Every structure is written in C-alpha cells, then in structure tokens.
Figure 1: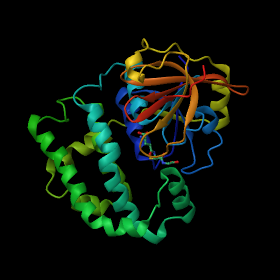
Figure 2: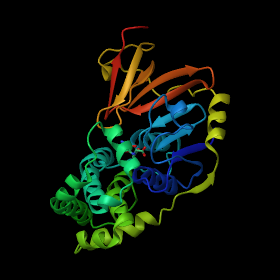
Figure 3: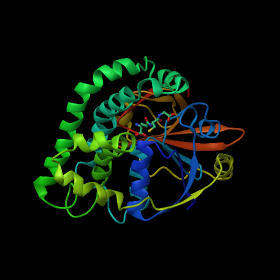
Figure 4: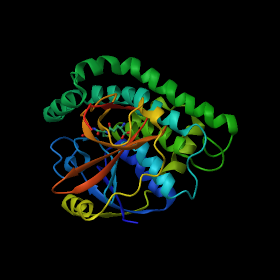
Length: 308
Ligand SMILES: N[C@@H](CCC(=O)N[C@@H](CS)C(=O)NCC(=O)O)C(=O)O
C-alpha cells in the first residue's frame, strides 16, 4: 500500500483530530504542511478545488474532510478498533455546532489581532462576513453554550464511569469530542480552564486522549505528493454502488460534489460509486492522470450535471 500522506497544518483542529487517530492506530505517515489560507498550489490540483484542511492522500486516492479520512483509516487499519459507539453523530455535532461556538469565542477575543488577509480568505470560504466585532459580541453568550456542550462530555463520561466515552478503549467519538477543547486550550488555555471548571472527568480524560500521540510523522514536500499521485492508479472503490444514496444517479454520471456548510467550492468528476457512508468521484488531467476523490455522504451534496 502507498504511504498515508496528510495535507494539513499544525494549528488546524480538524487535522489534529486525524493526527490523534493516526496515533491511536500507531501508524507511520507523511506530512505535507499546507498554508492556512489560499492559495494552496500543491493541494488544489489534487482535490479538483476542495481547499479545506485536512486532506488525506494514499497514492491516487484523495480523501476530503476529516469524516471520510477517519472512516478510511478505520477501514484500512481496523486494529485497534476505533469506530464504535455513536462516533459519527458526535463528530458531526462537534465539527459544526460546537466548532462555531469555539470560532466565535477565539476570533472574538483575538479581534483586531486577526490578520486582514485571513479575514478576507475566510469571507471567501464562507460566503459571509467574517465579522470579528460581531463574534466578540457573541463571545459572551457563546461561552455559556460552549461550557454546556463540554458538560455533555462530562456527563457522558460519568454514565459508564470508564476511561473513555464508550468504555475502556478510545474511539472516534472521543477524538471528535476532544477537538474543540484542544482548539480553545491552544488559543486561550486559561479560558478553557475556566469553562471546564468542575468538569473533573473531562480533565482526567483529556490527557488520556493526548497520550495517544500522533503516530510517526515524516515531512515531505507538496510537489513530491503530487508526483506520487501522478505515478499511482486509484484503488478499486471499497463498496458496491447504492443508487439510493445519490437520489438515483448512476455510476459514470457527470456530477458535482460540494460541502453543504462552508467552503462549498464545487468539485466536478464522474461518479465512481456512492454508499450511505461515502461519495467517490474520479477526475483526470494531463498532469496527474486519474485520481479518485472521496467525500463523506453526510455533509456533502452530489448533483448530476446532465452530461455523461
Ligand atoms: N468538515 C471539514 C472542515 C474542515 C475545516 O473547516 N478545516 C479548516 C481548518 S481546521 C479549514 O480548512 N479552514 C480553511 C483553510 O484552512 O483553508 C472537515 O471535517 O475536515
């Protein structure tokens, strides 16, 4: 099997969640550090326009979004098992609802210190104003909601009384639940401590997640990753196409895939297969040859373009 390559950056919370899963599985991986804003000349040719972090590459298979990245790591490396319990719904809640409260608190507090180029980039990404003043105004109420969501983790840990959310072993749900705490702690550790005050189970669970480590990481250049993709062929898609998962679209149809939250850049290609978990499309160009792009089924829209 070709190496796992993670296109990511250190401060990215979604990337950190994936790095922890690589640690949980004890895997070796290659790291391509991408910029935290556009342009991303070594990433976008691989993804056909998807620009968010992280992206995982294995040869000519490109996995866009931390949900499908974690699912593929679990599929290829089933031991130790990490996909059990209500991991995926926890992941979606933490990526969306809870994350937006973290963003408002962090960027509201940073206020004028946020680089204008970063603000302009995130406005383009979301299609909405990235209004740090509005975030600052919302940061107060958001703190209470942030703490309430951390309180769900505290109570869930109390239900089983074990080391992790679903028992004695760490699961994808733990890594997802850890993400926003890591994000706030990285930016404002004192505030994180204040908002976690009294949550003793969370406080003893958090270092257990950190102790998973991040696997064995080796840096490579973005151009090397592009070269690896150009030399490889995509693997056979790991499941049978389920027409019901795409509203009737057939294999081989020309389609456009886009996230349904932010960063909705359309990615076009031919439908390879889709299931309740995943959408796979293929793209070909003269530089890279054919790559298969994988997206999670939940959180992405796939539409037929009529041709093909
Ligand atoms: N749903 C996506 C969200 C990814 C995401 O929003 N990542 C942030 C960085 S943590 C991002 O890409 N921001 C814009 C950028 O870095 O260019 C996932 O789970 O991977």
